[in-house]
Length: 115
Length: 171
Image 1 (tube, helix red, strand yellow):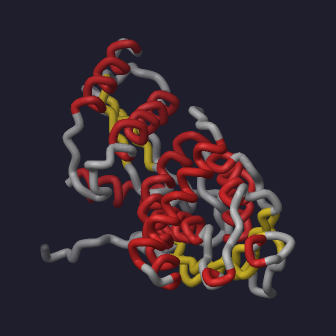
Image 2 (cartoon, helix red, strand yellow; image 1 turned 180 degrees about the horizontal axis):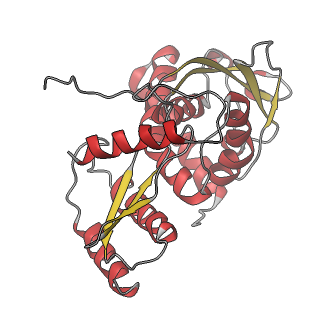
């Protein structure tokens, strides 16, 4: 469901972009990283932050609705992912992972930014 | 970024290639194996590259080749390459490596003339670009170890895939 939500939101965001001359049809295939993408959305109860790397890794963070721009923090988490998951020789790319060291560092980082 | 001693890196790579030759006994098999190893490195390396260089999307293939040459080679091999010899449709280019740390201390004996010593680089580039939906083929056309003055990697753009919804509506 998450995936469908992001996929639709992304194509929607791209189709709404007023700065491109050629409007792509809603739902038309996009190149990864092409056009614009959304960064967060806010409801009355929470705010959802979203980061997608050109390689297709998506990072989602749910926070308090008053949280500010967390893009730097998301890219730091991407760095943690690279360090502890991608460089883990036991991990096969594309598989779900359960990596203690990654989780520990992630929790520590989230604590330090005080969310 | 953590760096390791270049000589250790060079010597480790050399002994690895030597071991492959001993194990596989055929230079073409060794070339193939190096390419596969590079591919497996590349599909992981791309995320490190993206996370550390904080690059966004590339506009076109020219931009991509430029980033590989200037940022990628700098980051992982501490050398930089020149991009040259574009064909008319901007789908093929050469990366020219004047200084390649992998080939320090290396001499290729005559009976291994068919060995593409740095073939691992081709695999790395192919694997890394595949993860950002660009299919390329990559091979060495000139090699300092075979007596050329520079090493030249030929990159050829095969296709750029689009992001499509992977499921059918009925699923």
